[in-house]
Length: 121
Image 1 (cartoon, rainbow, N blue to C red):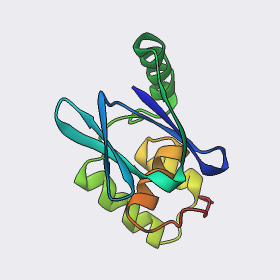
Image 2 (image 1 turned 120 degrees about the horizontal axis):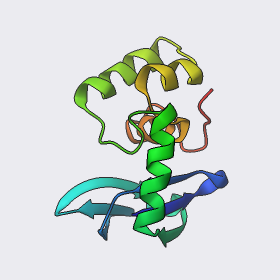
Image 3 (image 1 turned 90 degrees about the horizontal axis):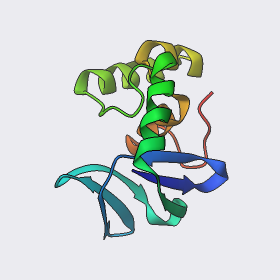
């Protein structure tokens, strides 16, 4: 597990065992499959997390956000896109998707729907 510290005190935890660099992006891999990527210019630091403490943190997060740290399904991603384009609030997205605010904002940025410096409201 890697913690990726981003601009403006934003961060994401990525379940990765390898990282590579590709045209200005850091690409994260687990068991040979890509599990995420971030623009290199946006990353302030990377930290390898203790697997045991991370599992406990994930379990705690999933009490309120059952899909925290899980891969995004095509259906969940489409729901996110639809709700975001309809003007749903941050709280509505969190409730409907069962994910944390940071995970939703990161996915919206990856999809090009939220600017790098834009906050989820």
